[in-house]
Image 1 (cartoon, helix red, strand yellow):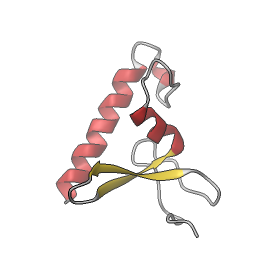
Image 2: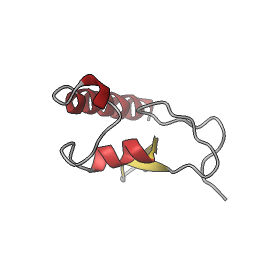
Image 3: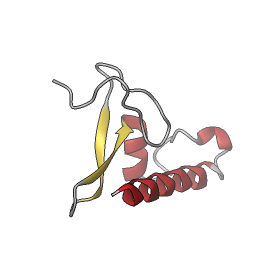
Length: 84
């Protein structure tokens, strides 16, 4: 049984969860178990170096993409932590 359901979306790229798709609960804080839902692509981007990973904001150009991705990740973190 999946821990995700219809209506769940990636906090970074807004991709909707579908059965058999790969999503993860990414921990923002282990102290109070604060997590956000991320698709596999964005979850990998958060954990891997932008030099090795072709992240979802690559359309902005090679120089701009890591900045845009990092900016979105920070925004997601701030919003999730404000809600707690």
